[in-house]
Length: 352
Ligand SMILES: *Cc1c(COP(=O)(O)O)cnc(C)c1O
Image (cartoon, rainbow, N blue to C red; front, side, top):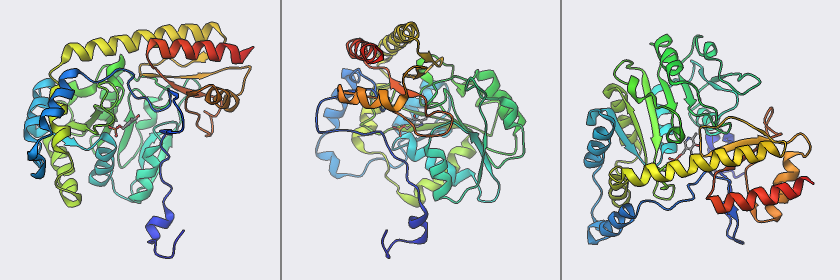
């Protein structure tokens, strides 16, 4: 606390990211990074972009990348916004579409950045309670609201909401923007992108951080009606005109070209997820059905904070959220097969 902080700064409760340790080598299953490297074509493109041109500002409109993304999703360039990681896009969207007095809706168990954005932008919110199985009760979003945001699949549960139900939510709320945060959609779910032409209020946000192994590059994008995209653009140009670096633009374009590589790494992660889920179930774990690159697990015999601590001592990092309803759970990112074999071995021994 400092006397120099503004009232806004004093009142903030910032998001706490998963740790990125430097003290020793861990098996990192705590921040949902992809265990596989990005496509070699992406790295080549970044290396090539690393030239003297870096003294010049990047294209503020990211035209070339937006065209590539538009083509990939069969949209128009005007329906695509590109930003410096999807977290930044989410922040811009809160500013662009939500007003302070009219409460927005999101699930009670969800990405913990949403209440943080609500607090920094003074936006009121109401939570919609998930059922016992962590499923989203769609009717909860059929009430008066100033906006809606839902991750699909949800975080940190990994549960997927059928894309047809997303369409129902968008249809029932023509007066407010419905944001679907699809950070994990590539791991087995179906994107709501196909409804963009049907609903002017639907905004889809995706990222290259998870399914395309580019968390360190920082690139996210939003897809929606051009009026929505223009709204985000107004906010962005009031903060910083050059959010996406030359290197990120170059790498991202290549990521959309190397489709074979993308499909292969995605397939491997899904396969590992299913295999690890089965093994954990046979050890007595409850494993929430996941369509993400992580699983949400709990064991009736051993408390999660204890498991968390013991795993850490053995060099394995996972995530524990000390929050109502989910404090009995651990979120475990899906690593490579070798990493997950070590994880299964260690956790099996901790149970006996
Ligand atoms: C990881 C994650 C993001 C953020 O991704 P970046 O593009 O790396 O900023 C957004 N939403 C959810 C639900 C996430 O888990």
